[in-house]
Length: 378
Ligand code: 13P
Ligand code: SF4
Image 1 (cartoon, rainbow, N blue to C red):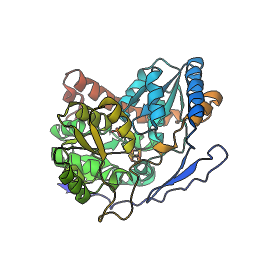
Image 2 (spheres, protein in one colour):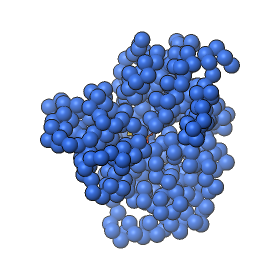
Image 3 (tube, protein in one colour):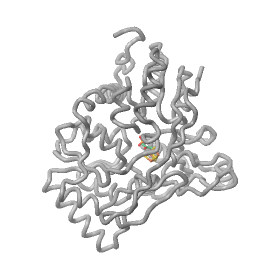
Image 4 (spheres, helix red, strand yellow):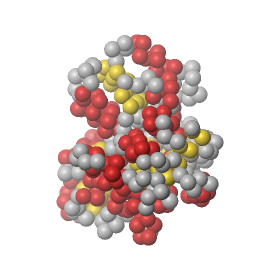
């Protein structure tokens, strides 16, 4: 049985004004605004990158970047001993790295997760206002009331949430492990309360048949992919394979040859025997997809057409807030340090640690299911 739980949530977004430090443009989507840094000139970029390389060494710092941020921030991370990856591996890498400062380029929940896992480290972000519609659409008070209304359910929360919401949960998941975790919980008799992404939750419910009540949030980027127009593009490129992030709507997921996290999409593109791919995820991914697969063609899944009310740019406005200039600034000044209250962090760490132990067991071929208690057991 699936109960929608709450109605689809609409979120009012803050529209931050440009200020002196952020003299770039303002990026707008249908629902959200964000400050986007000015694109530096070629010589400025080279100078900024040199500065960052030097500062990383001086400050014993390492960069951890998500696949959706500017290609410069992805390349710099990799070239300097850091990581570009999906949100699960970002968390693990930050926890395990010996650096005393982590520079997390991504959105707020990624910086918070890094801080929760490494309270002793300094975690800096290029822009602390880089948020996520899923996080914004799941405020603690309403979420707590939802949990209170379903005391018999195991609370499974997506990583794209605040530290406070994580602290109210039993299990944390990212898109790369959500299916496995929910399947294991279902096998042990758990009924699930899921939050906040309704599309990812719906996908997992269809795949596992788990009993789930769901929060009604969505990602403003993935919500914009259009199934009818995607069918048209597939007809134009009959040999193409379709790669879809599960935050996309059900009818888009139904057209996929592979559904998965950003890392799973990259893996599928490397391993699938096709020359052309249609990709339904943030177009920041195109950088890695194209550099890893020089002989293959990658097309963006449609966000416009008859079934669209506007043309979305398929790029997360908050991910776009991360820029070279701010990486230099935060390394030089120590500004934009992520803070998480220590006792809140300790509570939020429980579900994150469960997820990391579960996925480590899966990876090493151990029985991850044994880490999930039978319902009723302590
Ligand atoms: P991944 O966990 O797949 O990297 O996704 C994070 C995210 O924010 C997707 O929109
Ligand atoms: Fe959140 Fe969507 Fe941006 Fe990912 S792409 S950070 S889910 S708004």
